[in-house]
Length: 467
Image (cartoon, rainbow, N blue to C red; front, side, top):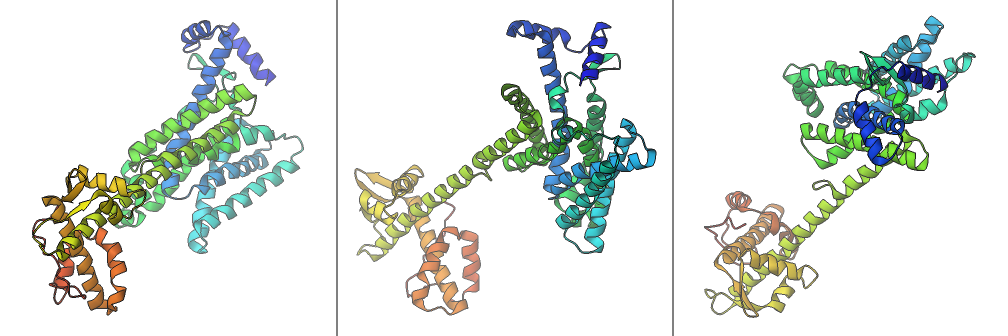
Protein backbone atom coordinates (compact mmCIF):
# COMPACT_ATOMS: atom_id res chain seq x y z
CA UNK A 1 0.00 0.00 0.00
CA UNK A 2 3.02 2.33 0.46
CA UNK A 3 3.59 2.91 -3.31
CA UNK A 4 -0.08 3.77 -3.71
CA UNK A 5 0.06 6.35 -0.92
CA UNK A 6 3.26 7.81 -2.41
CA UNK A 7 1.65 8.14 -5.84
CA UNK A 8 -1.44 9.77 -4.37
CA UNK A 9 0.63 12.29 -2.41
CA UNK A 10 2.63 13.14 -5.54
CA UNK A 11 -0.54 13.70 -7.55
CA UNK A 12 -2.00 15.89 -4.83
CA UNK A 13 1.21 17.91 -4.78
CA UNK A 14 0.82 18.44 -8.53
CA UNK A 15 -2.69 19.75 -7.79
CA UNK A 16 -4.65 17.41 -10.02
CA UNK A 17 -8.27 18.47 -9.41
CA UNK A 18 -10.42 16.21 -7.22
CA UNK A 19 -14.21 16.14 -7.77
CA UNK A 20 -16.30 17.36 -4.82
CA UNK A 21 -13.16 18.52 -3.01
CA UNK A 22 -14.75 21.80 -1.89
CA UNK A 23 -17.88 20.06 -0.61
CA UNK A 24 -15.98 17.41 1.36
CA UNK A 25 -13.71 20.09 2.81
CA UNK A 26 -16.69 22.10 4.08
CA UNK A 27 -18.20 18.93 5.53
CA UNK A 28 -14.91 18.19 7.29
CA UNK A 29 -14.94 21.67 8.83
CA UNK A 30 -18.53 21.17 10.05
CA UNK A 31 -17.61 17.83 11.62
CA UNK A 32 -14.26 19.08 12.94
CA UNK A 33 -12.49 16.22 11.17
CA UNK A 34 -9.39 16.15 8.95
CA UNK A 35 -10.31 16.91 5.33
CA UNK A 36 -8.36 13.90 4.05
CA UNK A 37 -10.34 11.53 6.27
CA UNK A 38 -13.65 12.88 5.00
CA UNK A 39 -12.48 12.73 1.39
CA UNK A 40 -11.26 9.15 1.82
CA UNK A 41 -14.58 8.16 3.40
CA UNK A 42 -16.52 9.87 0.60
CA UNK A 43 -14.63 8.08 -2.16
CA UNK A 44 -14.72 4.75 -0.34
CA UNK A 45 -18.50 5.00 -0.02
CA UNK A 46 -18.74 6.03 -3.68
CA UNK A 47 -16.69 3.02 -4.80
CA UNK A 48 -18.72 0.68 -2.58
CA UNK A 49 -21.99 2.11 -3.86
CA UNK A 50 -20.92 1.76 -7.50
CA UNK A 51 -19.81 -1.81 -6.85
CA UNK A 52 -23.10 -2.61 -5.10
CA UNK A 53 -25.19 -1.20 -7.95
CA UNK A 54 -23.34 -3.28 -10.54
CA UNK A 55 -23.71 -6.44 -8.47
CA UNK A 56 -27.35 -5.83 -7.57
CA UNK A 57 -28.51 -5.25 -11.15
CA UNK A 58 -26.89 -8.45 -12.36
CA UNK A 59 -27.84 -10.40 -9.22
CA UNK A 60 -31.57 -9.81 -9.68
CA UNK A 61 -31.60 -11.98 -12.79
CA UNK A 62 -29.51 -14.67 -11.11
CA UNK A 63 -32.08 -14.84 -8.31
CA UNK A 64 -35.03 -14.89 -10.71
CA UNK A 65 -33.44 -17.62 -12.83
CA UNK A 66 -32.57 -19.62 -9.68
CA UNK A 67 -28.89 -19.85 -10.61
CA UNK A 68 -27.52 -17.89 -7.65
CA UNK A 69 -24.74 -20.44 -7.21
CA UNK A 70 -23.37 -19.27 -10.56
CA UNK A 71 -22.15 -16.08 -8.87
CA UNK A 72 -20.12 -18.15 -6.43
CA UNK A 73 -18.79 -20.26 -9.30
CA UNK A 74 -17.66 -17.19 -11.25
CA UNK A 75 -15.91 -15.69 -8.24
CA UNK A 76 -13.84 -18.88 -7.83
CA UNK A 77 -13.18 -19.58 -11.50
CA UNK A 78 -11.53 -16.16 -11.84
CA UNK A 79 -8.35 -17.65 -10.41
CA UNK A 80 -8.23 -20.15 -13.28
CA UNK A 81 -8.36 -17.32 -15.82
CA UNK A 82 -5.56 -15.44 -14.09
CA UNK A 83 -3.45 -18.60 -13.87
CA UNK A 84 -4.10 -19.42 -17.53
CA UNK A 85 -2.87 -16.00 -18.64
CA UNK A 86 0.23 -16.45 -16.51
CA UNK A 87 0.94 -19.83 -18.11
CA UNK A 88 0.71 -18.31 -21.60
CA UNK A 89 2.55 -15.02 -21.05
CA UNK A 90 4.76 -15.84 -18.08
CA UNK A 91 4.12 -12.33 -16.73
CA UNK A 92 1.83 -10.67 -14.24
CA UNK A 93 0.10 -7.86 -16.19
CA UNK A 94 -3.21 -6.39 -14.96
CA UNK A 95 -5.00 -5.97 -18.30
CA UNK A 96 -4.31 -9.46 -19.74
CA UNK A 97 -5.20 -11.04 -16.42
CA UNK A 98 -8.44 -9.07 -16.27
CA UNK A 99 -9.34 -10.36 -19.72
CA UNK A 100 -8.35 -13.88 -18.67
CA UNK A 101 -10.58 -13.68 -15.61
CA UNK A 102 -13.54 -12.57 -17.74
CA UNK A 103 -12.83 -15.36 -20.21
CA UNK A 104 -12.77 -17.86 -17.35
CA UNK A 105 -16.20 -16.64 -16.30
CA UNK A 106 -17.60 -17.15 -19.79
CA UNK A 107 -16.02 -20.60 -19.99
CA UNK A 108 -17.59 -21.46 -16.64
CA UNK A 109 -21.05 -20.58 -17.95
CA UNK A 110 -20.58 -22.47 -21.22
CA UNK A 111 -19.20 -25.59 -19.56
CA UNK A 112 -21.97 -25.51 -16.95
CA UNK A 113 -24.67 -25.52 -19.61
CA UNK A 114 -22.81 -28.12 -21.68
CA UNK A 115 -22.56 -30.57 -18.77
CA UNK A 116 -26.12 -29.84 -17.70
CA UNK A 117 -27.63 -30.53 -21.13
CA UNK A 118 -25.39 -33.27 -22.52
CA UNK A 119 -24.72 -35.31 -19.38
CA UNK A 120 -28.19 -34.69 -17.89
CA UNK A 121 -26.60 -33.48 -14.67
CA UNK A 122 -28.71 -31.10 -12.53
CA UNK A 123 -27.73 -27.49 -13.10
CA UNK A 124 -26.61 -26.84 -9.53
CA UNK A 125 -24.42 -29.96 -9.64
CA UNK A 126 -22.87 -28.92 -12.96
CA UNK A 127 -22.04 -25.50 -11.52
CA UNK A 128 -20.33 -27.15 -8.55
CA UNK A 129 -18.36 -29.48 -10.82
CA UNK A 130 -17.09 -26.72 -13.11
CA UNK A 131 -16.14 -24.07 -10.58
CA UNK A 132 -14.34 -26.47 -8.22
CA UNK A 133 -12.36 -27.91 -11.13
CA UNK A 134 -11.34 -24.50 -12.48
CA UNK A 135 -10.55 -23.17 -9.02
CA UNK A 136 -8.36 -26.21 -8.33
CA UNK A 137 -6.54 -25.63 -11.62
CA UNK A 138 -5.81 -22.03 -10.60
CA UNK A 139 -4.57 -23.11 -7.17
CA UNK A 140 -2.18 -25.66 -8.72
CA UNK A 141 -0.73 -23.11 -11.15
CA UNK A 142 -0.28 -20.41 -8.52
CA UNK A 143 1.31 -22.84 -6.06
CA UNK A 144 3.96 -23.78 -8.66
CA UNK A 145 4.72 -20.15 -9.60
CA UNK A 146 7.39 -19.34 -7.04
CA UNK A 147 7.72 -15.64 -7.87
CA UNK A 148 3.96 -14.96 -7.84
CA UNK A 149 2.56 -13.84 -4.50
CA UNK A 150 -1.16 -14.35 -3.89
CA UNK A 151 -2.48 -11.99 -1.22
CA UNK A 152 -5.15 -14.11 0.47
CA UNK A 153 -6.55 -11.14 2.40
CA UNK A 154 -7.09 -9.27 -0.86
CA UNK A 155 -8.67 -12.30 -2.52
CA UNK A 156 -11.00 -13.00 0.38
CA UNK A 157 -11.92 -9.50 1.56
CA UNK A 158 -10.89 -7.10 -1.22
CA UNK A 159 -9.61 -3.61 -0.48
CA UNK A 160 -12.78 -1.57 0.06
CA UNK A 161 -11.28 0.15 3.08
CA UNK A 162 -8.47 1.59 0.91
CA UNK A 163 -10.50 2.38 -2.20
CA UNK A 164 -10.67 6.06 -1.28
CA UNK A 165 -6.89 6.29 -0.95
CA UNK A 166 -5.91 4.66 -4.24
CA UNK A 167 -6.50 7.72 -6.47
CA UNK A 168 -5.30 8.12 -10.05
CA UNK A 169 -5.85 10.82 -12.69
CA UNK A 170 -8.64 9.94 -15.12
CA UNK A 171 -9.82 12.40 -17.78
CA UNK A 172 -8.13 15.22 -15.91
CA UNK A 173 -9.61 14.37 -12.50
CA UNK A 174 -8.15 12.54 -9.54
CA UNK A 175 -10.59 9.70 -8.82
CA UNK A 176 -10.33 6.20 -7.31
CA UNK A 177 -8.59 3.73 -9.59
CA UNK A 178 -11.49 1.31 -9.13
CA UNK A 179 -13.65 3.66 -11.20
CA UNK A 180 -11.65 2.60 -14.26
CA UNK A 181 -13.25 -0.84 -14.12
CA UNK A 182 -16.50 -0.20 -12.24
CA UNK A 183 -17.81 2.62 -14.45
CA UNK A 184 -17.39 0.65 -17.71
CA UNK A 185 -18.91 -2.37 -15.95
CA UNK A 186 -21.96 -0.35 -14.93
CA UNK A 187 -22.31 0.99 -18.49
CA UNK A 188 -22.14 -2.54 -19.94
CA UNK A 189 -24.74 -3.77 -17.43
CA UNK A 190 -27.11 -0.90 -18.18
CA UNK A 191 -26.68 -1.41 -21.93
CA UNK A 192 -27.65 -5.08 -21.57
CA UNK A 193 -30.73 -4.16 -19.53
CA UNK A 194 -31.73 -1.42 -21.98
CA UNK A 195 -31.22 -3.35 -25.21
CA UNK A 196 -32.42 -6.77 -24.04
CA UNK A 197 -34.97 -5.74 -21.41
CA UNK A 198 -37.91 -7.55 -22.98
CA UNK A 199 -35.88 -10.67 -23.78
CA UNK A 200 -34.34 -10.83 -20.31
CA UNK A 201 -37.72 -10.54 -18.63
CA UNK A 202 -39.31 -13.19 -20.80
CA UNK A 203 -36.47 -15.71 -20.56
CA UNK A 204 -36.18 -15.17 -16.81
CA UNK A 205 -39.83 -15.85 -16.06
CA UNK A 206 -40.85 -18.25 -18.85
CA UNK A 207 -38.00 -19.53 -21.05
CA UNK A 208 -40.30 -22.03 -22.78
CA UNK A 209 -42.61 -19.24 -23.94
CA UNK A 210 -39.59 -17.20 -25.01
CA UNK A 211 -38.38 -20.03 -27.26
CA UNK A 212 -41.90 -20.47 -28.64
CA UNK A 213 -42.03 -16.78 -29.55
CA UNK A 214 -38.70 -17.01 -31.34
CA UNK A 215 -36.33 -15.63 -28.70
CA UNK A 216 -33.06 -17.39 -27.99
CA UNK A 217 -33.07 -18.30 -24.32
CA UNK A 218 -29.55 -19.72 -24.63
CA UNK A 219 -28.17 -16.51 -26.12
CA UNK A 220 -29.74 -14.45 -23.31
CA UNK A 221 -28.25 -16.84 -20.77
CA UNK A 222 -24.75 -16.48 -22.18
CA UNK A 223 -25.05 -12.69 -22.51
CA UNK A 224 -26.20 -12.42 -18.91
CA UNK A 225 -23.47 -14.76 -17.74
CA UNK A 226 -20.84 -12.72 -19.57
CA UNK A 227 -22.03 -9.56 -17.89
CA UNK A 228 -22.12 -11.33 -14.50
CA UNK A 229 -18.53 -12.48 -15.12
CA UNK A 230 -17.46 -8.90 -15.87
CA UNK A 231 -19.26 -7.63 -12.77
CA UNK A 232 -17.73 -10.35 -10.62
CA UNK A 233 -14.20 -9.66 -11.79
CA UNK A 234 -14.59 -5.90 -11.32
CA UNK A 235 -16.16 -6.24 -7.88
CA UNK A 236 -13.70 -8.83 -6.57
CA UNK A 237 -11.02 -6.15 -6.43
CA UNK A 238 -13.25 -4.27 -3.98
CA UNK A 239 -14.89 -6.97 -1.85
CA UNK A 240 -13.01 -10.15 -2.76
CA UNK A 241 -14.84 -13.47 -2.77
CA UNK A 242 -17.59 -11.81 -0.73
CA UNK A 243 -18.83 -10.43 -4.04
CA UNK A 244 -21.30 -13.34 -3.87
CA UNK A 245 -23.04 -11.55 -1.00
CA UNK A 246 -23.53 -8.39 -3.07
CA UNK A 247 -24.68 -10.40 -6.07
CA UNK A 248 -27.32 -12.43 -4.27
CA UNK A 249 -28.42 -10.99 -0.92
CA UNK A 250 -29.65 -7.51 -2.02
CA UNK A 251 -31.53 -9.09 -4.93
CA UNK A 252 -33.06 -11.75 -2.69
CA UNK A 253 -34.05 -9.08 -0.16
CA UNK A 254 -35.69 -6.96 -2.85
CA UNK A 255 -37.52 -10.03 -4.15
CA UNK A 256 -39.14 -10.42 -0.74
CA UNK A 257 -40.38 -6.84 -0.85
CA UNK A 258 -41.87 -6.61 -4.34
CA UNK A 259 -43.23 -8.70 -7.22
CA UNK A 260 -42.36 -6.16 -9.96
CA UNK A 261 -39.04 -6.57 -11.74
CA UNK A 262 -38.43 -2.85 -12.26
CA UNK A 263 -39.09 -2.12 -8.59
CA UNK A 264 -36.93 -5.09 -7.62
CA UNK A 265 -33.98 -3.64 -9.56
CA UNK A 266 -34.27 -0.24 -7.85
CA UNK A 267 -34.74 -1.76 -4.41
CA UNK A 268 -31.81 -4.13 -4.79
CA UNK A 269 -29.55 -1.21 -5.75
CA UNK A 270 -30.65 0.81 -2.71
CA UNK A 271 -30.20 -2.19 -0.43
CA UNK A 272 -26.75 -2.90 -1.87
CA UNK A 273 -25.65 0.71 -1.40
CA UNK A 274 -26.89 0.69 2.19
CA UNK A 275 -24.95 -2.54 2.84
CA UNK A 276 -21.64 -1.13 1.61
CA UNK A 277 -22.18 2.21 3.37
CA UNK A 278 -23.10 0.78 6.77
CA UNK A 279 -20.49 -1.94 6.38
CA UNK A 280 -17.77 0.67 5.85
CA UNK A 281 -18.79 2.75 8.87
CA UNK A 282 -19.00 -0.36 11.07
CA UNK A 283 -15.55 -1.38 9.85
CA UNK A 284 -14.21 2.02 10.93
CA UNK A 285 -15.93 1.67 14.28
CA UNK A 286 -14.70 -1.85 15.00
CA UNK A 287 -11.45 -1.79 12.98
CA UNK A 288 -12.57 -4.79 10.96
CA UNK A 289 -13.03 -5.86 7.33
CA UNK A 290 -15.32 -3.53 5.41
CA UNK A 291 -16.24 -6.25 2.89
CA UNK A 292 -16.97 -8.73 5.67
CA UNK A 293 -19.22 -6.30 7.52
CA UNK A 294 -20.91 -5.42 4.22
CA UNK A 295 -21.92 -9.07 3.89
CA UNK A 296 -23.05 -9.12 7.54
CA UNK A 297 -25.21 -6.03 7.04
CA UNK A 298 -26.69 -7.60 3.91
CA UNK A 299 -27.60 -10.70 5.90
CA UNK A 300 -29.20 -8.63 8.64
CA UNK A 301 -31.27 -6.69 6.10
CA UNK A 302 -32.39 -9.97 4.56
CA UNK A 303 -33.51 -11.24 7.97
CA UNK A 304 -35.44 -8.01 8.53
CA UNK A 305 -37.13 -8.41 5.14
CA UNK A 306 -38.03 -12.01 5.98
CA UNK A 307 -39.87 -10.71 9.04
CA UNK A 308 -41.51 -7.51 7.76
CA UNK A 309 -42.16 -8.24 4.08
CA UNK A 310 -45.85 -7.42 3.50
CA UNK A 311 -46.52 -10.41 1.23
CA UNK A 312 -43.79 -12.98 1.86
CA UNK A 313 -42.66 -12.05 5.38
CA UNK A 314 -43.47 -13.74 8.65
CA UNK A 315 -45.45 -10.78 9.98
CA UNK A 316 -47.42 -10.48 6.74
CA UNK A 317 -48.30 -14.16 6.83
CA UNK A 318 -49.27 -13.90 10.48
CA UNK A 319 -51.53 -10.91 9.81
CA UNK A 320 -53.21 -12.66 6.88
CA UNK A 321 -53.67 -15.81 8.94
CA UNK A 322 -55.24 -13.88 11.82
CA UNK A 323 -57.54 -12.01 9.42
CA UNK A 324 -58.62 -15.27 7.85
CA UNK A 325 -59.28 -16.83 11.23
CA UNK A 326 -61.33 -13.79 12.29
CA UNK A 327 -63.39 -14.01 9.09
CA UNK A 328 -63.98 -17.73 9.59
CA UNK A 329 -65.09 -17.19 13.21
CA UNK A 330 -67.39 -14.37 12.10
CA UNK A 331 -68.91 -16.53 9.37
CA UNK A 332 -69.47 -19.29 11.92
CA UNK A 333 -71.52 -16.79 13.93
CA UNK A 334 -73.64 -15.92 10.88
CA UNK A 335 -74.20 -19.55 9.96
CA UNK A 336 -75.04 -20.45 13.57
CA UNK A 337 -77.63 -17.66 13.86
CA UNK A 338 -79.19 -18.65 10.54
CA UNK A 339 -79.51 -22.30 11.64
CA UNK A 340 -81.12 -21.11 14.91
CA UNK A 341 -83.61 -19.13 12.84
CA UNK A 342 -84.39 -22.21 10.74
CA UNK A 343 -85.10 -24.22 13.89
CA UNK A 344 -87.24 -21.53 15.53
CA UNK A 345 -91.04 -21.56 15.57
CA UNK A 346 -91.10 -18.35 13.48
CA UNK A 347 -88.47 -18.85 10.75
CA UNK A 348 -89.43 -15.57 9.07
CA UNK A 349 -88.52 -13.61 12.18
CA UNK A 350 -84.86 -12.74 12.78
CA UNK A 351 -83.58 -14.65 15.76
CA UNK A 352 -81.88 -12.72 18.55
CA UNK A 353 -78.85 -13.72 20.58
CA UNK A 354 -76.77 -12.24 23.34
CA UNK A 355 -73.14 -11.23 22.88
CA UNK A 356 -72.01 -14.19 24.97
CA UNK A 357 -73.93 -16.54 22.68
CA UNK A 358 -72.27 -14.94 19.63
CA UNK A 359 -68.89 -15.48 21.28
CA UNK A 360 -69.74 -19.15 21.82
CA UNK A 361 -70.73 -19.50 18.14
CA UNK A 362 -67.36 -17.90 17.22
CA UNK A 363 -65.47 -20.52 19.21
CA UNK A 364 -65.28 -18.57 22.48
CA UNK A 365 -61.53 -18.04 21.98
CA UNK A 366 -59.25 -15.04 21.63
CA UNK A 367 -60.70 -14.21 18.21
CA UNK A 368 -64.34 -14.32 19.28
CA UNK A 369 -64.44 -10.62 20.23
CA UNK A 370 -62.69 -9.43 17.04
CA UNK A 371 -65.01 -11.66 15.00
CA UNK A 372 -68.13 -10.00 16.46
CA UNK A 373 -66.60 -6.56 15.88
CA UNK A 374 -65.81 -7.63 12.30
CA UNK A 375 -69.51 -8.38 11.80
CA UNK A 376 -70.66 -5.09 13.34
CA UNK A 377 -68.27 -2.91 11.34
CA UNK A 378 -69.58 -4.50 8.12
CA UNK A 379 -73.19 -4.08 9.26
CA UNK A 380 -73.80 -7.82 9.07
CA UNK A 381 -74.85 -7.91 12.72
CA UNK A 382 -77.05 -5.33 14.37
CA UNK A 383 -76.94 -4.78 18.09
CA UNK A 384 -79.47 -3.19 20.44
CA UNK A 385 -78.06 -3.06 23.95
CA UNK A 386 -76.64 -6.51 24.67
CA UNK A 387 -78.92 -8.24 22.14
CA UNK A 388 -77.78 -8.91 18.56
CA UNK A 389 -79.50 -10.14 15.41
CA UNK A 390 -78.75 -10.55 11.75
CA UNK A 391 -79.13 -7.52 9.54
CA UNK A 392 -80.61 -7.79 6.05
CA UNK A 393 -77.17 -8.05 4.47
CA UNK A 394 -76.07 -10.40 7.24
CA UNK A 395 -79.03 -12.67 6.49
CA UNK A 396 -78.02 -12.93 2.82
CA UNK A 397 -74.41 -13.59 3.82
CA UNK A 398 -75.54 -16.31 6.29
CA UNK A 399 -77.78 -17.92 3.66
CA UNK A 400 -74.83 -18.05 1.28
CA UNK A 401 -72.64 -19.71 3.94
CA UNK A 402 -75.23 -22.37 4.75
CA UNK A 403 -75.92 -22.91 1.05
CA UNK A 404 -72.19 -23.52 0.44
CA UNK A 405 -72.08 -25.98 3.33
CA UNK A 406 -75.07 -28.03 2.24
CA UNK A 407 -74.18 -27.97 -1.46
CA UNK A 408 -70.73 -29.36 -0.63
CA UNK A 409 -72.27 -32.09 1.52
CA UNK A 410 -74.55 -33.04 -1.37
CA UNK A 411 -71.61 -32.98 -3.80
CA UNK A 412 -69.50 -35.25 -1.60
CA UNK A 413 -72.35 -37.70 -1.04
CA UNK A 414 -73.29 -37.89 -4.72
CA UNK A 415 -69.78 -38.10 -6.20
CA UNK A 416 -67.86 -39.95 -3.47
CA UNK A 417 -70.67 -41.89 -1.81
CA UNK A 418 -69.56 -40.88 1.68
CA UNK A 419 -71.73 -41.87 4.65
CA UNK A 420 -73.78 -39.03 6.18
CA UNK A 421 -71.66 -38.85 9.35
CA UNK A 422 -68.54 -38.13 7.24
CA UNK A 423 -69.96 -35.09 5.43
CA UNK A 424 -70.20 -32.34 8.02
CA UNK A 425 -66.53 -31.79 8.91
CA UNK A 426 -65.19 -31.32 5.34
CA UNK A 427 -68.17 -29.12 4.49
CA UNK A 428 -67.52 -27.07 7.65
CA UNK A 429 -64.01 -26.33 6.36
CA UNK A 430 -64.94 -25.70 2.72
CA UNK A 431 -67.96 -23.46 3.27
CA UNK A 432 -65.69 -20.46 3.91
CA UNK A 433 -64.04 -20.72 0.48
CA UNK A 434 -66.98 -21.47 -1.83
CA UNK A 435 -68.24 -18.34 -3.54
CA UNK A 436 -71.29 -17.74 -5.75
CA UNK A 437 -69.50 -18.96 -8.89
CA UNK A 438 -68.53 -22.29 -7.36
CA UNK A 439 -72.01 -22.61 -5.88
CA UNK A 440 -73.50 -22.27 -9.34
CA UNK A 441 -71.09 -24.82 -10.77
CA UNK A 442 -71.89 -27.35 -8.02
CA UNK A 443 -75.63 -26.76 -8.50
CA UNK A 444 -75.35 -27.55 -12.20
CA UNK A 445 -73.45 -30.79 -11.52
CA UNK A 446 -75.87 -32.11 -8.87
CA UNK A 447 -78.82 -34.23 -9.90
CA UNK A 448 -80.94 -32.46 -7.30
CA UNK A 449 -79.97 -29.38 -5.28
CA UNK A 450 -83.07 -28.75 -3.18
CA UNK A 451 -81.99 -30.73 -0.11
CA UNK A 452 -78.74 -31.89 1.44
CA UNK A 453 -78.09 -35.56 2.33
CA UNK A 454 -79.59 -34.97 5.80
CA UNK A 455 -82.92 -33.84 4.33
CA UNK A 456 -82.43 -30.14 5.15
CA UNK A 457 -83.43 -27.51 2.59
CA UNK A 458 -80.57 -25.82 0.72
CA UNK A 459 -81.17 -22.03 0.85
CA UNK A 460 -81.68 -20.33 -2.49
CA UNK A 461 -79.80 -17.04 -2.40
CA UNK A 462 -80.90 -14.77 -5.24
CA UNK A 463 -78.90 -11.73 -4.18
CA UNK A 464 -75.38 -12.23 -3.02
CA UNK A 465 -72.14 -10.25 -3.23
CA UNK A 466 -71.82 -9.22 0.40
CA UNK A 467 -68.18 -8.25 1.19
